Amino acid sequence: MITTKLEWEELAECNKAMGDKTRLRMLALLKTEDLCVCELVEILGMTQPAVSQHMRKLKNVKLVKERRQGQWVIYSLDGERLPYFRSVVDSLPDLSHEIKALKASGKKVVCE
Image (cartoon, rainbow, N blue to C red; front, side, top):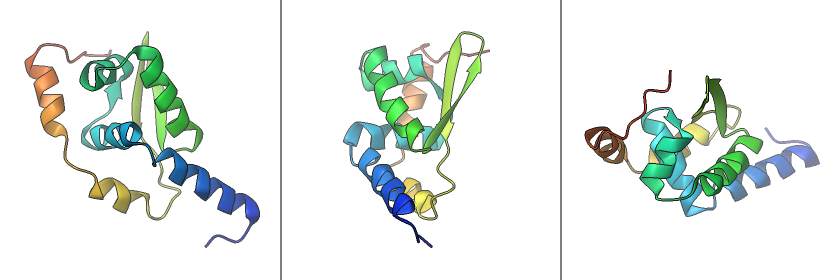
């Protein structure tokens, strides 16, 4: 239950972050599996700085989290603090075919 002004502001920021079609697509991709920045660059056809900027916005509102594996930055879904986040993610389209295409092209990185 949201009770404070700060909680309302955080909720508004989360919804603003999800109000972008590219970031929604990123969340849909991460619904399938954790992905490296370079994989998102390839799938989305964007530059690394552009992908990183979108991911930073999602990370700032705690919808995604990152972990480092050597030189790689791997992103995964977070957002469990929002009671409706799981239903939002579940409502996103299944983009697993895009990840399968990445693997088929040999561009799926084994970030280890």
